[in-house]
Image (cartoon, rainbow, N blue to C red; front, side, top):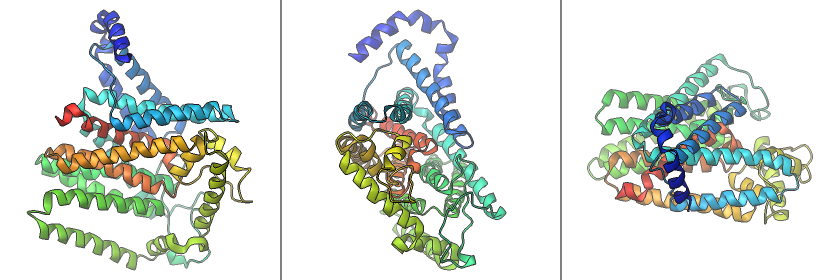
Length: 439
C-alpha cells in the first residue's frame, strides 16, 4: 500500500524531480547531513545533534516521495523494531506524565527515523558504506587524541567519578572524558565501544583491498583509540572492549585458522599476554578492573545495585505498558521508589530501562530485534565468501553486541553520540543482509 502511494506521488512530481538541482543532488545532501551528525556529536549539545538528524530524516522523506523508483521494504529484524516503536507509542499514550514522556518519545522517533533514513539512503549508495565508517573512525580518533592529551594534563574530575576511599594515591586513575557533552568518562568509553570496531574493520578492509598503507594507518588508529578507552576508567567499556576483542578473534579465525593457525595463535597469545602485563604493572588500571568484583564494597557498584532494586520494583508495578519513555519521566517516577540519597536518571541497564519505560512487550520486541539481527548476521558471516561484506558486517555485529554488554551496567547507551553510531551500524547491517544483496 505504501509503495503504491509512493508510486503515485513520484509520478506527480516526476517533472519537478527531473528539473530540480536540489532534488538531483539530494543523496549528496543526505550524506552531508549524516556526516554532520557524527562531527557534531564530538562537541555539540544533544539538541544540536538531534536537529541535524531531523534534517536527515526530512531530506529522506522528500527523496522517497519525489524520486522515481524509491520503495520501502523491511528485513525480518526490522519487523521487531517496528513493533517496538508501535509499543512505545502505546506506552506514551498511557503515561501518567504525558508531557515529559512526549519529550522522550521525540528522541526515540529521531533515532529510529535516522536509522530508516540511512537504510533508505544505502539502498542506492552501498559504495558509501566505507565513507560512513571512515567518518565515524575519524571522529573516534579525534576523541582518542583529546582523551590521550587529557591524561597527560591530569584533568580533574568534574564530579565523583570513582571511589577513592580505599585506594592508595598511585591507584587513583586520571579519568579522561574527551570533548563529548556532557563531559563524562563513561560516555567517552561508550563512544569508543560503539565506534572502535569501524577502525579495525577499515584496517582489515584496506588489507583485503591490498592498500597496505591505509591498512596500517587504520590499525594504528584503532590501537591508539583502544589505549585511550582504558584511560577513561569506564569499567563497562572494558567489558565492551573484551567483546570487541573476542569478536575480532572470532572473525579472524574464519580466514586464518586453516592456513595460518600458528600465526593466529601467536597473535592471540601476544594480546592476552599484553593485557595481563598491563593489569599487573599499572596500579591504577588494576585497581579499576578489580573494583568490578568488589560488589557492595565499591560505592559505584552499590549505587547501581540500589538503582536496579528500585527499577525492578518500578517494572513490577508498571510491567504492561511501562511509565512512558524518557529520562525526565523516569526520574519523576523513580523518586517514588528510590532509596534515600540514591537519585538516578535511568535504570543503568538497557533492558531494564526499556522494560520500565515501555513495558514487557516492548522489551520482548527489542530483544527479538537484537536476536534476529545477530542470528542473521552470524549466518551471513559464516557462509558468505564476500570478504569485504563479511568484514563490514562483522564490525556492525561486534559494535552492537559490545554496546549491549556495556549497556548492561551503564546509562550512556541512550545518549545521542552513541545512539546515532549504533543505529548506523544496524543500518549498514540491514543493507548487507538484504536478500537481493546476498543473492
